[in-house]
Length: 268
Image (cartoon, rainbow, N blue to C red; front, side, top):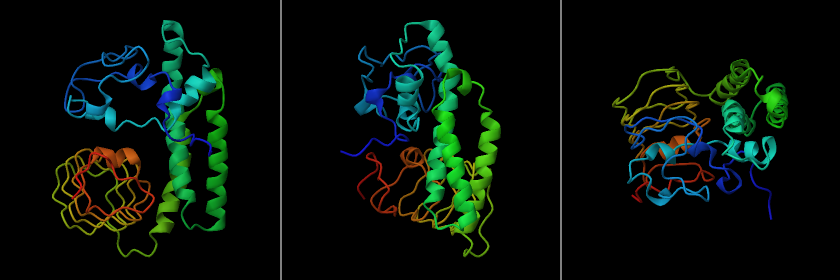
């Protein structure tokens, strides 16, 4: 039996932290308002979601796209073994470090994706060192975790990810630079976005049908409702499973062989 991936959510080893700690507001992503630190009314006593198979149909697509990158089980199993959510003081403390652990775990996921690229030895070495440093931070206790300068850590890692992305698309001529661009609802059907820099861009509801997104840097891009039918995402950089789940696609969407096609996508 292979060891579980520490960067993949394992809800069975968590305490439903994502159903309790965050707040959310009624809207397109959630069917009701929920204050921070209060259990979602759909959460059962066994820490399972009572409507998990029909979250989208019941108005909770925001739940389906959330990914803690394994932060839930890390906090529950290692930072607070035997966590009692009924202890409000403890729950408050958990709420201060869970976002920190999640941010670090997401950075670890991105660094791992960067390390899979064909990179020069010096950059590969820097990424390996960053990977080790992030793992050490995640393994720390409560006191150390709450002091982590997340912004500074993210900036340092993002510099390495940017360099890795630049190297990966070095053969692309004149890639489109759209970092942080507001492309919500944009008509990009059939667009040549190969090697485009879309870091932090809003692709909310964008029409990307048939677009070429090979080697495009999608770090942090908002893909909710983006239409990816027939789009070519092979080789896309830093594309997370949650970004795919947030979008709409089908059997014609071209993905790398090791990428899992979201279950809710149409077959064709």
